[in-house]
Structure formats: C-alpha cells, structure tokens
Length: 61
Image (spheres, one colour):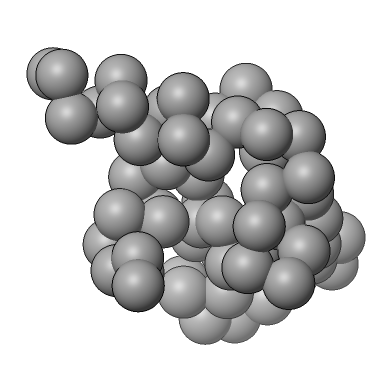
C-alpha cells in the first residue's frame, strides 16, 4: 500500500495532475496536490501511467 505522504509528493511533482475539486474547499487536505485528489487517479491507479515513473524519480533524489 502506498502512503498518503508519498501520494502527496507524487501529486506535487506530477505534470499530469488535474484536481478533482474545481471549487474552493476550506480544508487544506482537500486542496493538497495528491494522487487521491487527482482526476487521473481512478480506482487506486494512475490512468496516465505516470505514478511509477514519478515515484522512481522521487526515490532517486
């Protein structure tokens, strides 16, 4: 299982990130760039196939 912290780091570094939330939300966790908040993250998988590539880039740095 992938941690929420890692999903946030991946979301912050993802060129394909598209927020699911189009309106203003009051909670910072609802605004956070995270895979969980990305329109391209469906059923626990990145449909743009960017997740693993970005995770590896983060690990190398």
